[in-house]
Image (tube, rainbow, N blue to C red):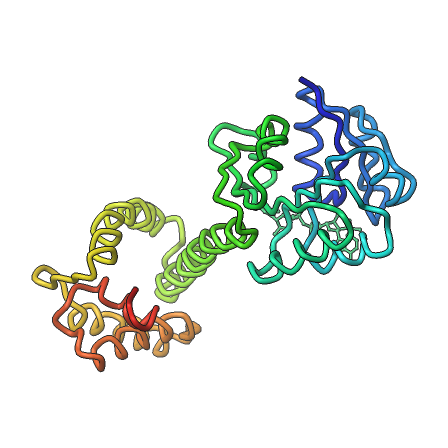
Length: 287
Ligand code: NDP
């Protein structure tokens, strides 16, 4: 079934989404602050709205793909949006998302908050998925059309949930990417090429999934048996990574943050526990 919709915000993500909506036969109206970013999409069959209000009036379903929620306020403030379903796939804090839902409700519009979990070239590809939260009936009414950009995973009525899951994923992603750069920088201080180190780093990255079950199970049970590897031993390695960074002029801020976790874990009496006991430092109270 074809569902007409409007997409506002045509950065790499908005453009990729519009291309998918069109490919699946959903008539799509577009608007972007920098109008030229719509040109290629219009050639592919999208309808260009001359103004924001024209874009809003064209359809009930409005998808936003903006840098943040501040951009949403800038675009929608003062416009007529009563009766609209706003699916906001822009990044921001969970708290901001909840406030936006109230702001939209005061103006007669409903918010479905979302977070699409793939880079632009993979929008709509196999394995792409998106988190959504907000009113269940709104999600169910739009699930079919949203599916074309990625598998829609509904998390619940609380508007903050999609953003929270999205950011938790980015937390892991950004930290891991920064760690990757850092370990390459360390090796390169010896004049070794990144390519020579790459197979080992790849192996290390793949082995991380091995730790999932132990981590989840220990945290859920609140038990951290340290018989195979404990915080004292791993904390010494964290010290050595800081030492090696400082000695070679590689920025030490990232390993220092890790060192601090270990030091605080040891100070709290977790030295003989498994490293997952650091969860008590990351989330005081451990629950
Ligand atoms: P961009 O920052 O490239 O594009 C953002 C869009 O927001 C542009 O259309 C821009 O308009 C518009 N915009 C920003 N501020 C304003 C404003 N004040 N008024 C009007 N329009 C504004 O982002 P992406 O397309 O890369 O990403 C969109 C969202 O998707 C972001 O929240 C991002 O975190 C998220 N995301 C991005 C991924 C990626 O790989 N790029 C992956 C997954 C999620 P203009 O063209 O005029 O500048």
